[in-house]
Image (tube, rainbow, N blue to C red; front, side, top):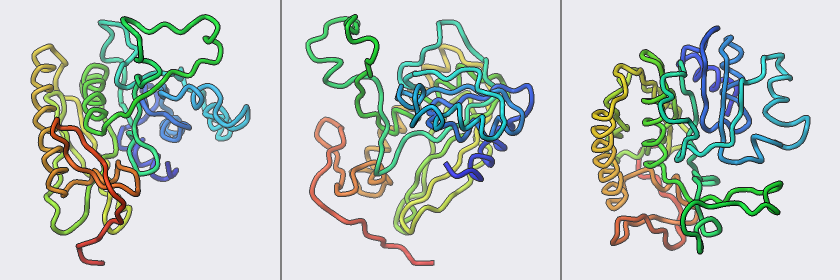
Length: 279
């Protein structure tokens, strides 16, 4: 994460002294470093235990990044899965802002708990054998953008205070014949800012800033699920028509196509083609 961009994100989240900022995809902590610079208390999580625990060594990790700039350490860094959040039942409205850059891109897609190693031959809860606990790295599976953003909105709806902000990046396609982008919605949130960062002739990403305006309830959770299913259906439809940015999330040498059961399949070698105007 570019340092200037991290500062802009922290500013959009209204990071300030006395506020608690959370990043569920903390990585090396760039966003939290910016939030801490504005005086906020910080907390982060990542599914990769190696990032949270070790980084690239004792002097090259999240903690050393904070020390380099003379900033207070995060309150806590968790090994946690955005798809299976670790919060106890009943815990809610503790964060003033959630600021993050969800996982997407050609080189690295999103991951969630699961995978063949975890599920093969397992019935019921998975238990790590005692002799493997010390160095165990949990198995993971692919985590689609649609599912990731749905979980992020649900997390924010539960855990943000009223008036709290959710700030995150969302990728879009810039081609001239592409439909206008639609962004995920949630009954608890009002979208107040959309700021585009151009990445290439074909792709850009937008920084979405949302404010929590309603308390999370079971009725809202059910309404949000309906909105998510509608958004997911449109997402898959655009993939089928070849008009969505989903190629961003596929391997660089693959195209995507909708399978019979609604899953996204990748096939054949290809190169992206820009059909818009060069400006």
